[in-house]
Image 1 (tube, rainbow, N blue to C red):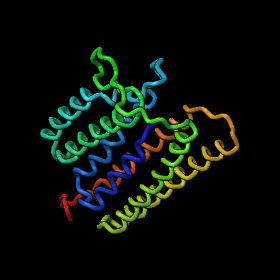
Image 2 (cartoon, rainbow, N blue to C red; image 1 turned 30 degrees about the vertical axis):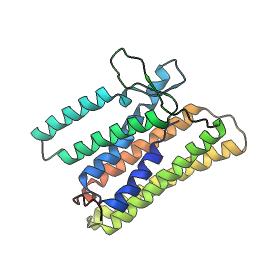
Image 3 (cartoon, one colour; image 1 turned 90 degrees about the vertical axis):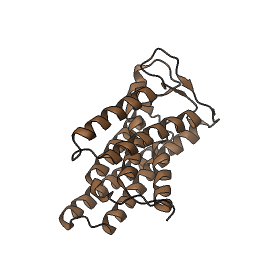
Length: 228
C-alpha cells in the first residue's frame, strides 16, 4: 500500500501551523508525491512484497537533485532553487517514511546490484484495513483540493485565472469522491476487485494533484517564517 495522501496531509498541517506557503514548501509537497509515480514499476518485479520502485532510490534522488540544481543555475527564471531544495527534502522524506512504515521492500540503492531494504516496522494490518485506508486516501486528496481552493481565494491570484483554477480543483475533488465511493461500494458489496485498478486510480490522483500544484505554483511565494 502507498501512503502518499497521509504524507501530504501531514505536511500541509505542519506548513499551516509552523510556516508559510513558500517555494521550498511547494517543492516538499511535490517531492512527497513523486516517488509513488513508480507504482507501475512494481508490476515488472515478480516480488509481491516490493513497495518502492526506482523512484524510491536515494541514489536516483541525489542524481535528480544535482541535475536540477545545475539547471536552476543555468535557467534561474524557469526553475527556482528553493523549489529544487524542497523537492529533494520531500523525496527523501517519502523514502524514509516508507522504510519506516511500509512493511515492504524498498529499492533504496537502485540501480546498484544491492538487495532492497526491508521496512524497519512490519505493521500487522489486515487486508480489509489496508483497503479502507486506501479508500480514505481519496478523501484526503479531496480535502487537499479544498485547502488549495481556500489558499487560492486568500491569495492575490489574478481573478480570471482564479476562476479557472477553482473550477479545475473542484473537478479534481469530484473525481476523488467518485473514486472513494466506487471502491467503498465494491468493498461493501464484496465484489472482487483488482489491486491494479485502485493503484491506477491512485496514480491518476497523484498526477492530477501535481498538475494542480503546477497551476497554482505562483501562490507559493511567501518566505518561510518558522515558528509563527
